[in-house]
Image (cartoon, rainbow, N blue to C red):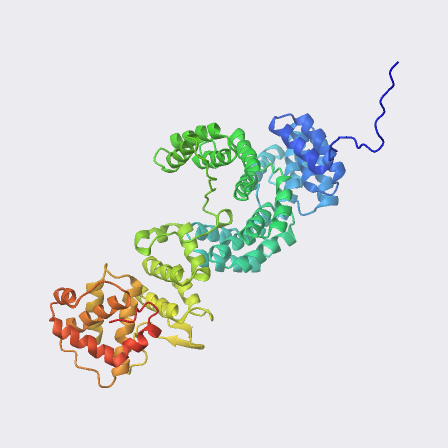
Length: 579
């Protein structure tokens, strides 16, 4: 017989160890749920609970599956264990118990836990369902439900008002309403989440982050706050913190449809497209949003970003049929066609109206091309608030012009706040004052200029002059009227500043204004030169009906009084040094 070959004691076996932990069993459970294999999912969730006995999420998932399998008593034992021994803030467990008791026809017990839910739950995520159950229990018990108050309805009117303000783009007003509401009801987490959102819209990142952390201090498992915090970590490049939170979110398997949608959109923004696609598919399978083209669009984006191009094509075609007037499905189908032709597919972004779910950037367009869009588009408006706080000099100039077109209370409030910022450019502040005056603001304008707090009369253009003659006003109005549509708001501001500067320096020996149009023409000529615009004396002569010689004389007079060649660069940042 041949000798047996023995393995060398020094040779290590080529076996890859399988890591058996809560995450492993959670993932197996999720895969089983996706295939509707509830028994297997239950078995895997039980193993996950063994590894992480203090994680309420896995307990809750297990209770949900038991309820699906009509094992209501066992489900309720787990739900009761959660609120009594693991996390008392998970008040939604009371609502789940009420459902289970109702399914067992134990309406008295269902009433007890439903009242506990309504009187202790801060968010009210199941309010619509709870109202239906109240009606059912009242019918079965033949009496009204013994309910003293509804916790989540405290401050409901103010909260609904704030949500409407957010949807309309009135972010500063929403902040004021929500701040009062949170002060009155500090445990109203939905209000805190929306306050964080409103603060983010207006560029108050640190305050927004403080609100998110406060929500998580009260309820560490608040899904909306966790998702918002993850987007913050991504925005500020905090990779280590983000990775830990992504791991936690990827192991979350919410049952409530609103939570599923929130988680799906967040995971998409975090480039966790496989997880996003799994949750979006769940929503479509459940029938949620069956007539909502947006949900088909979001699912298509996730499918596209994971390489499931045929699925994405089918979903965008479905969205196109549901919303035939929309350009969105057609645009994305063209992007998909580009990828199918052999070009490398570019990752597509998830676009939503919530800034937590997309980074805010100022549109790369001029204020004129925006038309009245800032007035009706909350996303564009929010980008303006963000850019006014965090943009560069030119971006802020663009925003100031856009606010001049919006002309509403929200824009006015943003400009008034801008004037009190100690580190903002003085020239930009003067433009903001000009914009406020063009908007017709009636209240005194408070500003921090040259290190001093001052108050300006909105109707008084030249505060350093003891009087303001009618003809001086007519000169400026003539120039503005003639320049309108051809010069932007910044150039109009510079013209007004130049005229006031000339009058102030010349006072009290100001030349007699015999012909308004001649001085207006000189002002336009000088303003055009300051902004490097092509212009000639002949051109302005024809426009204003004044001789070239008269315009030239007035240009030299203004130059002599203001010392334009030496000082204009200091007064106007865009001046090129030539007249």
